[in-house]
Image 1 (cartoon, rainbow, N blue to C red):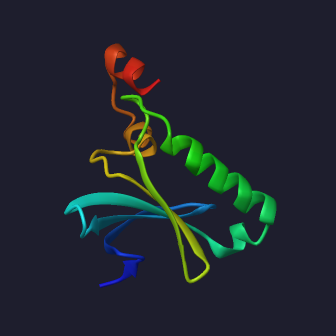
Image 2: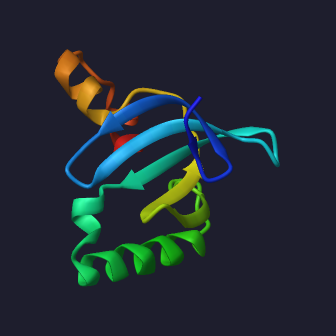
Image 3: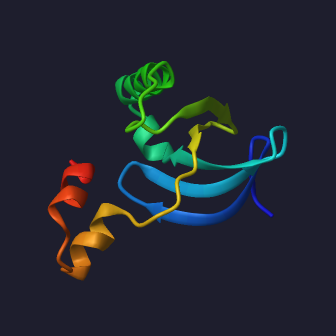
Length: 111
């Protein structure tokens, strides 16, 4: 099983231009988390890397029901990652792609 730091990767959830997101297990607290692993090519730019770390630290200080909780920020083997709460559900792209009718109240929840 692949590991990122102390976290055991369960599955890949998605990938984009900035990195890859995994569902993982935190063995210390025995909970599932989401880990965003930033691509090395993105971090080659020192300004981008500094901005990413600054944004992760800022997000880690926020507390609101509509903001994902950031648990940890780490680096291992020249790889930088953010550990966040794992939220089950569908992503917005998959909801849009289904073209199903969405009630107004639900649309407002997404906004």
